[in-house]
Amino acid sequence: MSSERYLNHPTFGMLYQVSPGNEGKYIYATLYAQKMFFLVEIKQKEVFFEVIPYLDARNQSEINLQRSRRQGSEEFPKWENLFRQTFL
Image (tube, rainbow, N blue to C red; front, top):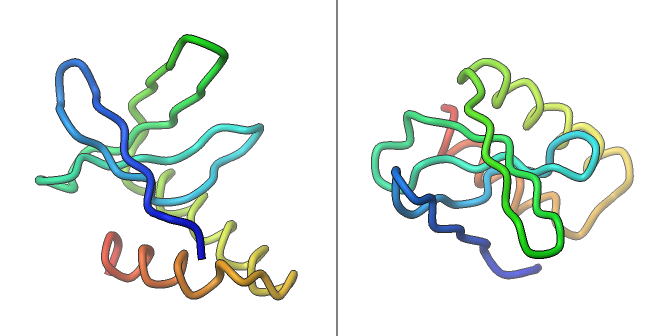
């Protein structure tokens, strides 16, 4: 399994990666409150943050789980664990 990924948001502090998103973007959540979700795009030397609703983050995370399960990904247990900790 790969290691956990964290980013520092300039306003909301530490974020952790919840799931890969669409089109090379990633879903991150605030580390402490776990109430705000961001779609993050990393391009060369810039990081772009877009706030997304809880249900959108959960939906994209479920899609990632289904894809990982179908592909027999070694990272499936990691994503499943993060999903349960974050959304259930």
